[in-house]
Length: 298
Image (cartoon, rainbow, N blue to C red; front, side, top):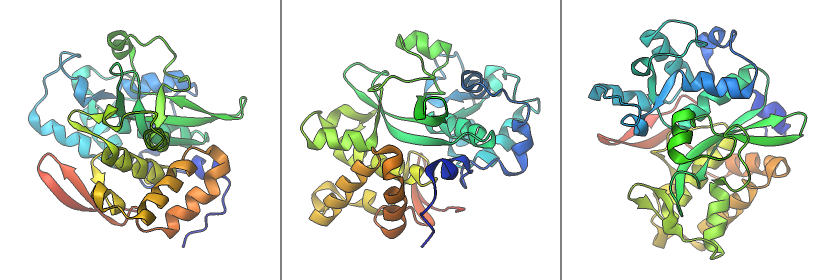
């Protein structure tokens, strides 16, 4: 078992297997230190796969494979292959790599960690994409030394998206309630405070979907930031096949993921001790071509 007795700020300042830029770390050197400018930098390198029509883009079908890039080092390699200029220079839209909310979040997380700022990607649901709906989403939390607190940032929301969505708040300092961590969503539904069918994306919704995001968020808090369609462990169990022990574990995980630094030691300990929630070396990834088994580099 890995050592879990680590200060959370020390833990989240170190790169994860997914966020580590590896041989491309030097590309981060010239980047600004301001979080808002870093979000603009990330937006200048990447375009969200679901927003292509809004940007007026039509890309070759094979480019869809770019959303399968799990590791920041490989994403940076592809970015440089497409356009080998400094990351400080925004690419033309057609030269930006395809990604989703997880990818925007992980790249910002990687840069912040490189700059010595504790940061972590969070998986849950956003309230600002559709009315009366909790949309499957990832954001970043970074440690604000002056406020002595985690600040939530949505690096995906550029000017166009803010205009289309009518965003009236600061994406670089999300107000409470705009993003709902998966653990909170789980609790809201089990307390009868929200309808599980309001949580999801496209035709996928319900408690099973919330459970998947709960485990993805737990893995991300343990610095295993997987793709939104990666599946393992208790995610694979049907709702009506969950045992009382499974439900008790999920309830506990939901509580711990909402406790901030106070729950960190137990977040680490229960993740390392419990194979039902810990991402194994081999996971199932549900791609457009069907489910495939993937061996993780962790």
